[in-house]
Image 1: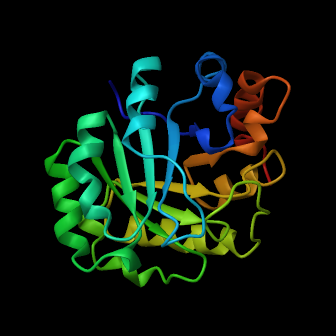
Image 2: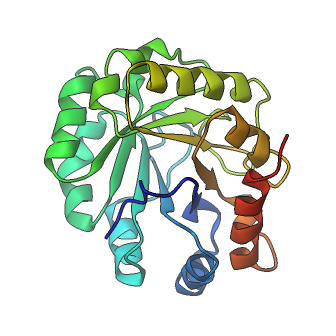
Image 3: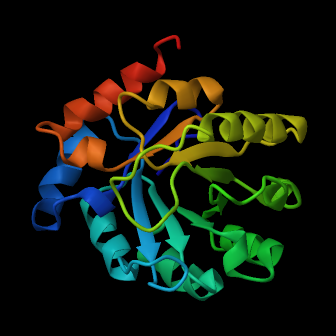
Length: 227
């Protein structure tokens, strides 16, 4: 299984917006449409006001596809999930620095279990939180909405933050992916890509469309549009 690092653009549909009664069908549709990763939002009802998936969803998706599973933990004490999520088949393990104490230690533990290590920054979280551990990151996730629920509107200030995050990654010679999550649609993805993002989490835009596979293709095409 490849992590997609060799590609220039990664589209990662979020199963938070999928019809769970048709999960296998919808996974097949987005994979056929060229989805690079599948994104799994894990929420504990404490770090964010919602409760979603756990290791069981990761295991179910791993049975459906060999695509990388991009897991975003919006939970307190994310370190408690490193072992079970690795065992379940997670490929990328991303957490928030405010949710734990020993950030660098946990990033190293994630890598030690064979997963890519990611750090997520909320709209109000400064890039300095990532700068201190940039050498330990395989992925930096910029949240373009306040996390907790799908279907939110992209925050316009996110483009500038993505631009500064790209500069941070470049200044340290890092090869980390720069991912953006929240409000990614046909109308917002081109500007986010122009700002420097290379990996795009998209939920409602894909799974509420009449043809999820085609929507994946269209979102990728929009990244190539000059803005």
